[in-house]
Image (cartoon, rainbow, N blue to C red; front, side):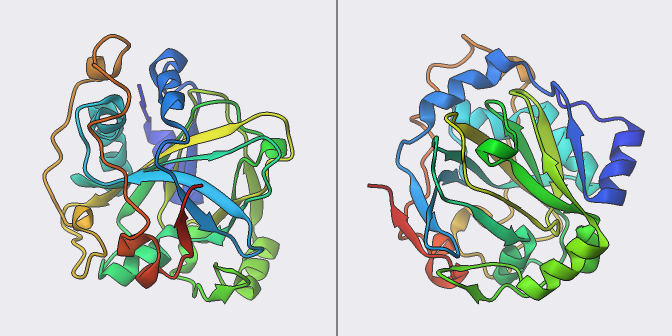
Length: 275
C-alpha cells in the first residue's frame, strides 16, 4: 500500500502533487464511511455556504486512529518530506449530494505557519473513500503553485482564502488540475500547494480522508492545539487496518471540537458545530 517510486517522487517535487492509483484496497477504507457525519465541524466558505468535516490530532486504537499511523502511509509522508515525521492532524471531509459548500482556494501552510512552524516541510495524503469527479466537487489544484512561497490569506466574503489576485495570476501561468479519483486512490500534495474544491452538483456523496504530517525537526513554536506539538508517532503495521483487525471504526479517537482555537478564533475560520 502507498508505494511510491523515484519517478513519482520527482513528479511530487516538480509539480507539488502526485496521484497514486489503487493506493489502498477499497475494502480497507470503505468502513471509514461509517464515521461520516459524527461530531462534525462546519466551516463557512467565502459565499457563506457550509462545508463539513471531522478532524483529529491524537490517534486512538480504532480504525480512524490507526490509519494515520499505518507504516506504509507514514513512510510515504516521510519520503515526500525527506525525513522522519509526526502526525499533524487528519480530517474526514464530505460533500453531501447537492450541497453548495466549497473549499476556497488556499494553502494549508499559510494557516500552519501562524502556529510558528518555520518551514513548509509538511505534506498531506488524501485518500478517496468513494469516487471523486468534477461533478461532485473533487479536489482542484494549481500545478506548480507550491513553488511560489506563502500567499496572503485575507478575509474573502464570509470566509478566509488565498488572495484572489494572486490565485488568478498563478492560474493563468500554471494549470488547474481536477484531481478525479476512484475509491482507494490517493493524492499526495505539498503544504504550499494552492488547492480547493467546488460544490457537489451531483446526486452522489464525495468523501475524503486527509492525513497531514510535519517533519520532526520542524516544531510549531505557538501551536493552536496540543496535538500540533512534535510527538513520537507510534506506527502500526499494514495488517492492523485490515477488516477484522480492529474492534471499531471510530470511538477511541477524539474529534476536535468547535471551541478548539485551531478551528476558529486564531485561525480566522468561521467554525460551528454541525446541526
